[in-house]
Image (cartoon, rainbow, N blue to C red):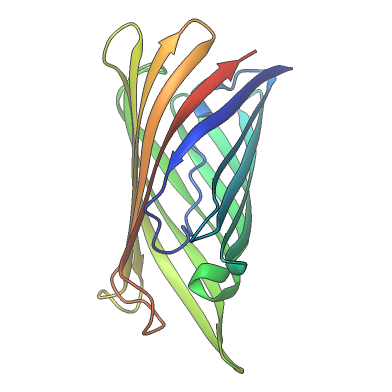
Length: 249
């Protein structure tokens, strides 16, 4: 088994609300016929006038069998301030790709809860087609088109709000070596409600990596925008910036 272990030693977070989109692109280029395992654990702790605990765990497993690719992604985030729990969120996704040279058909299933967004349960399932525009395995730009079903249950005091949507999905994935030791990845998702063009979500995650043999240093930022939040106390935009080390075995 080929293993990749990621350790974030510092987290700079300006998170407004929890992210609800999982990025499975991170290990795609590392997967060959063997199994790939990626895991990360980071934390931010403050004590004094304000007591803050912020921890995040994530892992991805990928396996390629002939022209079939299977990935499993899991994330967990816990945040508390002065013993008040702000987030206790978990999410998981299973993703299947049927490869046709550099292109692929894909299916996915995702389940999560996001306390910071008052989402008690969120279930997604859908599929689509991914096309290589330019490049090769090392340097490329891909696009994908798809559709998925979205079921969300929100907690509103003693009541519950249930959202049932279909969304079109348009995505752009890119990876480029800027130099022998510098790598730039970028992922963009645009998700449009099929019945309401004013309801859309955008997720952007650029990632800059610096390679030093088996040790990589990286900086990444995640930006999420929802044009029509379903609860009045939710903000349109949230973002998170972090950097750390990646150690490859």
